[in-house]
Length: 163
Image (tube, rainbow, N blue to C red; front, side, top):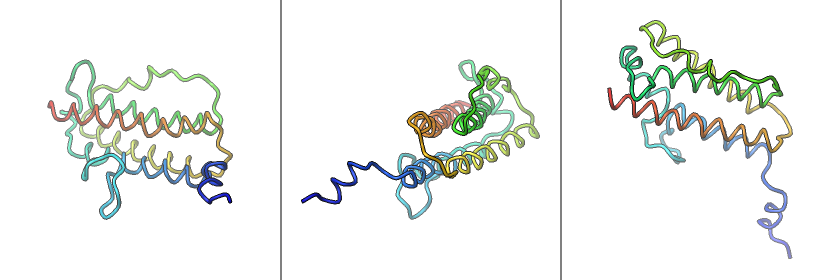
């Protein structure tokens, strides 16, 4: 007699479960761990938005081993935008060097960059939620959204601690 677990292992997970899981991790990366819900990998009170809000424009512009928090933030935003384009079918090459053009910011530019990061994050959640048959490549890109932005969150946090 076949068990429910064996049937699920044969079928794999549904697109809905996959998307919800990736979105949960992306939310934790950007918004931090929600109170009363299990954490996947971050301590409470940690996330991109919380971290960025605690960094001044001056601190975001200070060089730390050849990079700045502003550069890391711009790159993470650029990556989110481009990966969603690729998930949605973009095939044209991207000049990834363009993602590192912003290194220093003033107060207004830093506020605008933080706002554009929030918009890119919200668009990424919408991108994930679109109805589609996920290909192996798209699954990898969706997982990359989480892994890559988590990496840059760590880099930004280290830069913030050093400044």
